[in-house]
Amino acid sequence: MEVLRPQLIRIDGRNYRKNPVQEQTYQHEEDEEDFYQGSMECADEPCDAYEVEQTPQGFRSTVKAPSLLYKHIVGKRGDTRKKIEMETKTSISIPKPGQDGEIVITGQHRNGVISARTRIDVLLDTFRRKQPFTHFLAFFLNEVEVQEGFLRFQEEVLAKCSMDDGVDSSIFQNPKKLHLTIGMLVLLSEEEIQQTCEMLQQCKEEFINDISGGKPLEVEMAGIEYMNDDPGMVDVLYAKVHMKDGSNRLQELVDRVLERFQASGLIVKEWNTVKLHATVMNTLFRKDPNAEGRYNLYTADGKYIFKERESFDGRNILKLFENFYFGSLKLNSIHISQRFTVDSFGNYASCGQIDFS
Image 1: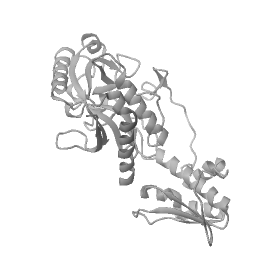
Image 2 (image 1 turned 45 degrees about the vertical axis):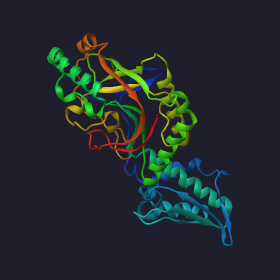
Image 3 (image 1 turned 180 degrees about the horizontal axis):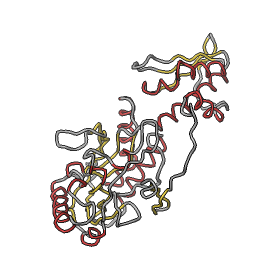
């Protein structure tokens, strides 16, 4: 099935199949000690960007990091920390598991402290990238008019296309969870959630107010499209979202938010622009109603998981509902939504938000 349903990658606005490549694996390949050796080959160059404090005993530098990542600096049996300390002639103090605080690096030589700091930052960045997404920036699209339009779409699709391969009620989105994603986040502490709230507020003050004019953006949800390259084997069908006045303000706004969060490191740079879409059908829902798109296809250590999916034939749906009108709504808030949570309204729980008006 991996040959028939390969991973898709998007290049210059087009989707391409990424065919599986047979890779050899070796015993102990995933050991953190081995990973440390490979990752540190490019991390020995001292960096003057770090703040290093001179003390009566030598030099000192601190690193802020979520407690969830401490174990990757310690390593198995403490070997990773010992190796860094030995090679840089420093001492590294790490808070105990479950305790918040700073990683403290001390040493007799400034370059040694900087070298240890560089190596720790490489490890933190690498293992952060392997964490599953925890939150996402999004507009909620669950106003009454759009929910009713979505339910009408579902009813009509099932009435006219239920005989098509793979089409049934289980693959439709929950109308209360309709949303427009701007970007995915890995937030591992309350401090990082607060940092995200502050970054979003900065975006509002620096450019969102100008783009929105301090008013909600009036948009329409109309028309459908599919994600992959074969309309006869569709996994994700989405509705398109655009400004009612025909302007590019929504696209400009979300692209600038994405750019700002990528520059800060809170969002890993994967795309240069946001694809404005609202998922209405997804074959992952067939077996798991709480599945959340392609972001479920990675383990905690970042490995891609192939999940067998029963695609559906979307050709008739695309032909009959190409220009289906779901409704209009006003976008007035960007939310920091937490994955796998539900609020009292049945939507994703929000950890913070900014309002346009």
